[in-house]
Length: 476
Ligand code: SF4
Image (tube, rainbow, N blue to C red; front, side, top):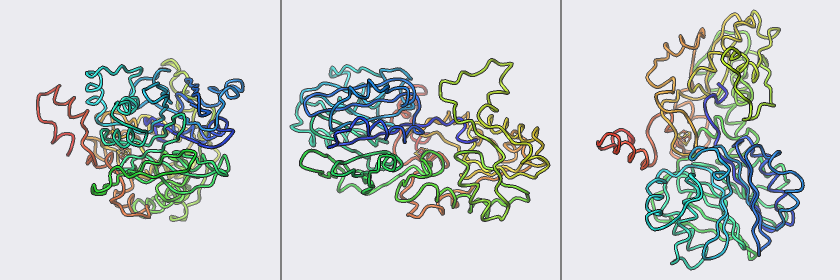
């Protein structure tokens, strides 16, 4: 519930041609904090030197004034991270900065490479030494190939080797680069602040620094910005277009004030809620959102159904990733510390609870209990996306298939487990109906099990473990 069991992924930022590059990157990362709370980092260059600071923890804690002041230069990239590949250590925090034959380069990556293990083994066999266990570092090693004559050749050559999800910003001593994979899994936007260019995972980062949104960097596009301006490259031109933008960015990950994949996230969520009310009506007195990710869908549900919206849960916003799980005897605090029901609002009422997803189901179950204890007469749970039945290999850290409650359990079984009076999910068709663009542009693999790419690493693992041909299992 409220993205329960789902770990966020990463946010990237970049700026070129501004005296306050590091400060603006810091603010941009603040706006992108929801995309990753484990570590934050900024690399900055003045054209001659490149400096890097990264730290585990939140953006606000990672950059004390003195550190920020020391990051001088007019171009920078930044990153906030939640680990999807590689563990939570400072060496896996980004940006990565490496020295290679053409100078220094720093990279910030959102997404997951699905052929990372294959490439890494290959590179190690040829003598590459990795400083981290993260898949993102692979890209820099690919770029270091001596035959590339310049940055554009190095990037265009390298993107053709990697498979999977990558929205990246990359910094050299003279260029800022934005790269989006040909499927366009993760968002990446281009903006301007005065004469300076900015790149960010989401437009909410532009809003904070008063930058103008220019356009999205398109799936399969590379933009290279230097003192002469911006050049766009299309390394995959000629390949059949196959976009797979992550629909879950709209359901849960992105901020509702961001424009993602061409439309405002909050409005898409409201439409999800309206369609959910049409598909899964409920006889109830109030509609209660699970804040914050359920807010807009609940508003849509309320508008469509005519059932009044009531904020029956209060959310505590001050729990970072550092919150220590209480000992077993104190577990009941764990759920309540984040969301607390208000008995004066839910007491004696038939409540429709609107949430974005159910993953394992344990948190949802605890919250249903809390609502009942607060006096709710009936609890009808409505979910603004279809059941999650498959993991994500493109940068979202869902638990394994076996841990997903909707995998192998019927609707009735899930309802029983959660202890709700009724349960209704949005249909796959309903999900796609809420989007304004052709449905072929989106990935919905975690709801269908049908992946837009081959999952090379999973195939390898399966083959090693079983000796069988994995195609049926992972490509189904
Ligand atoms: Fe997004 Fe799900 Fe596709 Fe992953 S599998 S990219 S979460 S839609």
